[in-house]
Length: 311
Image (tube, rainbow, N blue to C red; front, top):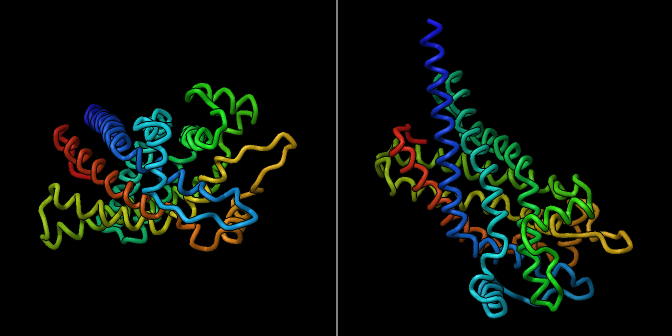
């Protein structure tokens, strides 16, 4: 009896390790493909935040991307890729594998059926835990992405690389500085994963149950498109606040632009208007759609090749 239980536990552990590896590989592929869109989104969200006297001049994602290429070359679109990949080595396995384990645990108690609201809650919880762990890498990514914008304005870059950014942040802001903006960060993570994981899971289930498509690339594409749209619509305001909170650095006099996420929200709306909370909506959705397509298609294929059941 003990031998069979031990074997069962070993099997579960092996499957979990496989899932962690496969989510990491799929996330790296998806992040590399879509990173230029993420960089464009970050620069667009930061546009206009210093213009207190007048409203920011209109811009769009195409202009921002063109300006990056013109000033820094094509490789400028990959400024901050390494910390982004490092972040996903922690963030994605925790949220994906965590959600699946929570879902299966709850489904066992509920007779195998879970409502969309329960899935949304489980997705949000998984995202919060994952983002709390990965927040330092996310901070470094945002700072390095914003560095390219400073260079285009004639300033010297703050950091030469991820390690240099890590050391300088700890030295100037303390170890706790690595978690600057963690509150808006986890707020965004809750909203993103609530929309993304629950919507993908539910949309895929709907497609399969109604025989719209088999459990293949077509079903995964439909489900990932829907989840990307839901995640973007719900999380974009929190994403704007998170980006601005994480990018701010205290002046020499110790002054900061935003006291907290609420202050950032109020100042953004007062200075730039309500629409500013959805700055970067199109590049965010344009990134989340392809990101999820690449991630979910590759992840489902990897699982199939590894002998694991569908997500």
